[in-house]
Amino acid sequence: MNVLVTGGAGYIGSHTVVELLRSGHEVVVVDDLSNAKIEVIDRIKEITGKRLHFYWIDCADKEKLWDIFRNHSVDAVIHFAGFKAVGESVQKPLQYYRNNLDSTMTLLEVMEEFGCKKLVFSSSATVYGPNNPHPYKEDMPAIQSSSPYGWTKVMIERILTDYVTAHPDFCAILLRYFNPIGAHESGLLGDDPNGIPNNLMPFIGRVAAGKLEKLTIFGGDYDTPDGTCQRDYLHVVDLAVGHLKALEYAAKHEGVEAINLGTGNGISVLELVTAFEKVNNMKLPYVIGPRRDGDLPAFWADATKAKELLGWEATHTVEDMCRSSWNFAKNAST
Ligand code: WQD
Image (cartoon, rainbow, N blue to C red; front, side):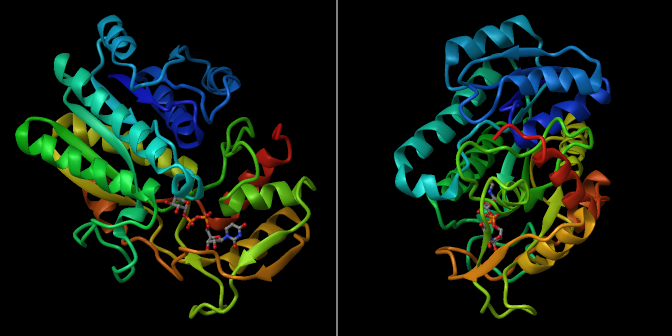
């Protein structure tokens, strides 16, 4: 298939592009490089030995997007492009709503003009909000979030659902990711955010590399087995393969489907830190600090739907995730 990947230079996007190319798909990447580096495109080529088309554009730029659809006959789209920093979204809600919603609606309009009817959307477990019991299942209410970032995911899921109601021959797969960590085995691709990382694993990577002094674990008094929060961490390469499977499913189906991509296991912050220390044979300086506003004590996926519908399940262990994260972080530029 000819697959357009928006945000294809980003952390999850780049790993997905590698899997697409390896499976023989033709790939067109659009990315505005607002939170990604141009070198990533060369690294994808280096890893796969394949060519790809790259356009440095904002996917809310309708004319430029239109040109891309005119030049490539796009069969399907995987839509990652969007701002994703939870804390920043609280400070800059308008930017988040404008950017994430505009890019999606522009993309849908252009897809409609060109008769492209297959879309895989990068959603998030954040749509389950604070009130559902875990493990989260796709049929639970997914109508509330705790940050403008999260609300953009809820709203885009709604937009896509309404769009499919009006266009029943369209297929939209809403992939709800849990906590992706890890990196490509080559050490060439990984999570390398600008500035001080908000997410746990890139923060650990910079502490391990001596670029940050110590990790602060946010809260040690939660009602969990060791007092620290539990999350469903999954390897980014597993996640990338999940997109490939979702694309193959979309190619043969119509309608809208929300699907969790997680391992189905909860791991605590302390367990992750300990696993990182063990597999990488090092000590990580850390302190237990106060809770972070907005953090939920524990959640993980019920991952049965992904297995049943897509034939997908996570195959990498926590040790794989910690080893590959360090293999990337020790050489990362920031
Ligand atoms: C994980 C755990 C922290 C940093 C967020 C978004 C979600 C998705 C993934 C994607 C928590 C703890 C963290 C640190 C710590 N978004 N932690 N010290 O909050 O589960 O999910 O990222 O784009 O939508 O909400 O992920 O990696 O920030 O935190 O103790 O320095 O690590 O409290 O328990 P989170 P995270």
